[in-house]
Image 1: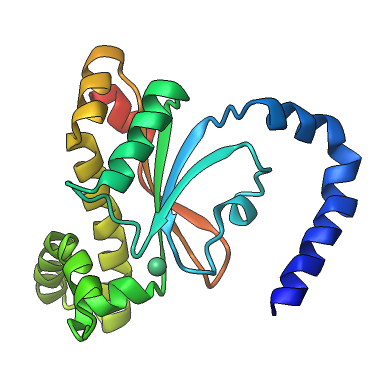
Image 2: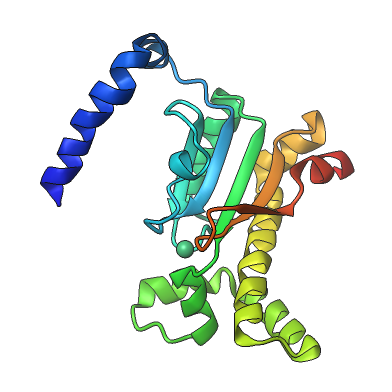
Length: 202
Ligand SMILES: [Zn+2]
């Protein structure tokens, strides 16, 4: 497997890098990504590929179940750098269908304690979804779909409460916060939170 990844890099150099050498030399000097992407670590949701974006387009943070945690130095540093230095004005939180992290959140059957602790941060989305599932008599599949969406909405709310984001949005009306769900079954993206709407309403 490792050999095929290195062989893939050789093909990338010959088929993509070499024909677009000017572009790659420009971004080698300085990156100017326009979007911060917060996604899941799942191997099926590679942001550059599913959005057909070249290197240099997206500044990226990925973790299990695309969670925006408070007291997380990792995401805090990412946000500082993305917003204060790169001046990125759009943040996308992208969840996805058939997310293993979200499935574990729903069943609660997680033996690894760090993963269980991590998923606790999304428990508000689970409570909301379970109430809606009972009220609307959702099937398990519909419930899982709703949970993925509710988790994205919750993480957008978390993001909007983080100090640097809150301060900038109050003063400058950016970053805009976009909530999306990528469908692994079709390759399509659904908009769950319209960042432009959120931006306008402040
Ligand atoms: Zn996932």
